[in-house]
Each structure stands twice: as structure tokens, then as C-alpha cells.
Length: 236
Ligand code: CO8
Image (cartoon, rainbow, N blue to C red; front, side, top):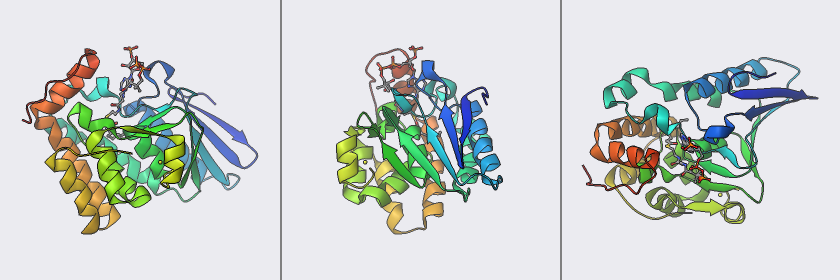
């Protein structure tokens, strides 16, 4: 079945859900979020479905949250709309979900993969949490889950440098899933993993993500991406 931003097929007891926004490298916008979460809930309620597989295209599993959609948002709008909360329904799905990742799994794309029960990677897969380059931090559990997958040191490196790791490295370090330092918000978000439960940490991270929309660096980072230039950060 084709819905606006996803394709769903059933193969025996496997429900295959393919992200389908090729022109935007499967960037995760509100519509895709709605449709993917609904597809997962629907599959979960179907007793004939034994497993859900989420995949993207050869070039991109998903290149993150849709930057065009959110670049101009204010911190207030981010808090009030709370779009990322919908992902809690995705993680509540009891049917096993496998992420089959080829190409880019960046930002929200990497986070989506980590919300699945496990990740199968093509040798073309590239994982990363490049949000810092946009003046924001991961927003749907990246700092929290990455830490659990690959340990604090490597997760800090990944989030603070924004670098990508290839499939071989990802497998070596247990993601099937690399990085280095940067700003205070991220340091705090990741360190919370030692003080809190996962769900509390994920909620904390989401609040920090929304708060970055009150900063100049978020506007500059996202605008620079859209204008295809390097950002000039002022740490404000
Ligand atoms: N959002 C919107 N559009 C995007 C995104 C994105 N994340 N990524 C790529 N695109 C678009 C480009 O703007 C471009 O569109 P156009 O042709 O209209 O200019 C098209 O996709 C193709 O992209 P490129 O020309 O850049 O392709 P390249 O092969 O040169 O580069 C990259 C591929 C390296 C993947 C590059 O596109 C890139 O760096 N993308 C941004 C990656 C990124 O920063 N992701 C993090 C986003 S922020 C985030 O995810 C926060 C998570 C919060 C929670 C998420 C909830 C779901």
C-alpha cells in the first residue's frame, strides 16, 4: 500500500515499511512521522504480523528530521506542538521492529534506527548524529540510546563532533554503529544517562532540543544548511 510518505508491503508475517521521500533523502517531517507511527501501530494490532521491518532507499535510510520544516520554528512552537512525542507510541510497539539501513542514517534517521529492536546495516550504511552542525542536539533519544549502544565515550564523540561512522565501525562498536566534543547542552544531556531512567533522559533531551530553537546558533546552523554554506556560530 502506498500512503503519502511510506510504502507498506506484507511478506508472509513480515510487514515491510519503506520510507518514501526520495527527493528529501527521507527526511522525517510531520506527515512521515504520523504515517510511520500509524503503520507501526496498525501492524502491531494485526495478529498475522510477526515482525515489522523499516527501511529507506539505497542512498538514505533517513537524513534526519526535516530541516526545511522546522528551521523557522520558535522554541515556544516546538514545546507546544511537541511533535516528537508521537515517537513514544512507536517505541511502545510490542511487535519486533528491525531497521534495515542502507546509506545515510543521520540525526533523527539514526535515532529512528535505534528505536527499532535491532539494526541490520548494508555496507553502504553511514550513521551519525550531526545535529551539532545545525546548532541543535539529538531530539528523539539519540544521546540516550547511542550511549547505551556504544558506550559514553564513543557516543559523546559522535554527538559532539557530528561525524559519521561507516557500517564496519558500527558493527565493531555494537550499534551495528563514531565522534568528538562540543557544547554544554549535549554534555549535560548525555551525562543524564547516568542519573536517570531512559524515558526520563529521553524527555529531558527533547526539552533541551526544543530550547535550542531559542538560540542564534540553531537559526544560523539550519539556515546555513538550507543556503548551502558553512555556519558561523556565535555560541548564543
Ligand atoms: N531535511 C530536509 N531536507 C534534507 C535533509 C533534511 N534533514 N537532508 C537532505 N535534505 C534535502 C537537501 O536539502 C536536498 O534538497 P534540494 O535538492 O531541494 O536542495 C536533498 O535532500 C538532497 O540532499 P543533498 O543535496 O544535501 O545530498 P548530498 O548527497 O550532497 O548530501 C547528506 C547528503 C550528507 C545526507 C546531506 O543532505 C546532509 O547533510 N543532510 C542533513 C543531515 C542532517 O543534518 N540531519 C540531522 C537533521 S536534525 C535532526 O534530525 C534532529 C533530530 C530531532 C528528532 C527527529 C525526529 C524525527
